[in-house]
Structure formats: structure tokens, C-alpha cells
Length: 437
Ligand code: UGA
Image (cartoon, rainbow, N blue to C red; front, side):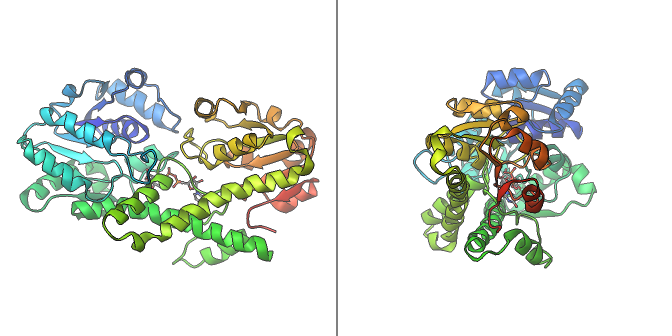
């Protein structure tokens, strides 16, 4: 099928390349000429494992092109809208200006029978509003909402082999037409018996935000238990193991630590709260405000543990911060707890040296005041406290004896509960985890 993907960020670039890989003829559109130029030569504008390979092979097949000109999307049968919906400045609500701009720009180019497919995460009610806009354009096109559940770091795999498909479609013949087209685009996943939910717009929109709200709640639940563990001497990691054996609960997303970040979970729970309040149902999900607060308190806890460890030497000490991206296998520093911790420590007068395998450049753009170091060895050298905040494999597997030979003072704050406390203590370190004795 001929398809267009509007917006070539973390979501759209992967989607465009993956759809071409599946055999479709794809044009990726973005307003940023630099991004389009980079993608056109097979270079990914951000770090995503597997993306360069898929991009290169899709471009070589001739099935994938990129352009800044939305008119080039005109002959596509399906237009995926994959632009960002960041948090509005000064508000909890989502900024829908990119989604609105993308759909408005598409309107003059929509062919009869074509389908606009929303992938962006939007407040419930957005699809119905956009469908009315498309209807009013008399283009003969229609709208479906097809939320995306990919995780950064696994985006290619999640797009090629999704764990479920959700189509929000209009009722009647238009809905059948939309479902048939989507089934054609996702023929490989459908043939592999991927669970499929065909529903209305509102449900599809809510599936996405409620999935992220649930994940955020699960993380904050275990982080709340970490807070209780801290005043009772309990160990939250053992607690998580023990409750996780109950398969109604499950161990996944019970990793207590510095908390969640990124371009999705934090802004999605805030936008959901804002939307529920607009709908007069703020109380139904008021708990998400607590989820957010618990999450932000964990960053503060890492900062407090570090400052306490430095004692009277805050201004003369060096702190090595391991990790800047919001999670491993990503260079994304949007709302990253790790970068936040580094910035807060720096603001308190600490000499912070931060390292990350992929995210230094993105971090530097946002916070040029921090000192960055490519080499792990140099980051550790002479440090008074080592703070692990993003559990990249090279940090998780750090040898406490080797690290101990480099630092000035052997104090570690394990912001992801990634280390074996006894191994570090045996190597001479003062170990501080989150929610661990
Ligand atoms: C999240 C969802 O997992 C995806 O399903 C969704 O498609 C995506 O948002 C989105 O809306 O686009 P992502 O932001 O890539 O994906 O990251 P996650 O793997 O969900 O991790 C989010 C944050 O939670 C990270 O900062 C991670 O370190 C943290 N986390 C995760 C914990 O603190 N503890 C855990 O046990 C698990």
C-alpha cells in the first residue's frame, strides 16, 4: 500500500521505516529539513537500536522516501499522523498544535477513500473533533485512531511485531472500510494472530493513555513501598520479587528507583488528568497526581542521599553521575530523572561529572552548564560519590573493585537498585539503594 507518515520523530521515523520493511511504499514527511536530509541518507537522527539497519534496507529497496513537502503525500491511501503531543508550557494539558497542523496541512491532499490514521497520543475526544474536520473538507477521506505502544529502545521490534493492535474507527461502512485498510497494512501482524481490538475513537484514545497511566502507577506504587521500606528497614527489591510471584501482579514494572521519565509517561498522566478535569471527572483519576508526586520525590531522594553522603564537603567534592537518558538503550533526555538529578546536584554547588553511552549530546543542548565526560574511567576518577541513575549494561556490570581503585571516596548511590549491595560493601563501598537497608 502507498502510505505516508507525517512526523518523523521517535515514533514516525521508526514507523515509516518499519512499514517499508513490511513491503509498503512509504513517504515520511517532516517540517524539519535537517531531519529529512539525515533520514534520506539512512542515518537515524536519534539513537534507536536496529533503526539504522531497517532504514538502510528500506531506502535501498526503493520503497522508502522522505520529504518536507506534504503535497508529496497526496497519492497515499493511508496517512499516519505521528507528530508529538508534548506538555503545554504552563499547563498539564497536551499541546495539540502539531496534530492539528498536520491534519490541516493534509486536508487539501486527501484523495477520496483515503484514510488518515492517528498514532499520536491525544486526549480523548480529539479523534472525533478531527474526524469532523475531515468530513467538512469534502475530501471523501475518513479517520481512524490506531494508538502506538512501542517502547524506546525496542521500537523497531515493537513496530514490526506489536503485542496488540487497536483500531478506533467510525461506525458503519466507513468503519468497515477503515478496518479493511488497516488489516491490509498490518497483514503480517494479523497473519501472526496478533490480538486485535476494533473499537470506537474514544476507547482507542483511552486505551493508550490508560495503558501508560497504569504503567506509571505500577512504578509509583513500588516507589511508594520504597519510601515505607526506608523508614522500616525493609528491602523493596525483595518485596517486589515476593509480590511479583503472584501472576496477577507480575514482577515487570516493579523496579523501584529514581522513577519514570521520558517523552511519554510523565506528560501522558498529566494530560490525562487535565482532560479528566475538563470532562468534570477529575476525581476519577486524581490519584495520578499522587503518582506524579511520588515519582518526583524519588529524584529528590537520590539528590538528598548524595548530599548527605558529602556532608560538609558539598562544594569541594566531585560526584560521578552514571547515566543521562531516561532509560537505557535510548538517547532521549526528555523529562529524564537522571539528567534532573545531575542538574539539581550541580545547582547545589557540587562538581558534577556526568557520562552516558548515547545521551551526552542531547543533555548538553539542554544543560550546557554541566560537565560531561565520554569515558567511564575518567568520570569515576577522583569521585567522592558515584550515582547510578540510568542502568545501561556497562554501568550495571561495573566492577566495584575496579571502580573503587579510581574514586577518592567509596560511596555509591544506586538510583536503580541495580547493584548487589553485599558485593559493593565487600569491596569497601558505603552502599545506598532506594528502599533498601
Ligand atoms: C512507554 C510505554 O512503555 C510504551 O508502551 C508506550 O508506547 C510509550 O511509553 C509511549 O507512550 O510512546 P517508554 O517511554 O519508551 O515507553 O519507556 P518505558 O520502558 O515504559 O519506561 C518509562 C520509564 O519508567 C523509564 O524512565 C524507566 O526507567 C522507568 N521504569 C520502568 C522504572 O522506573 N521502573 C520500572 O520497573 C520500569
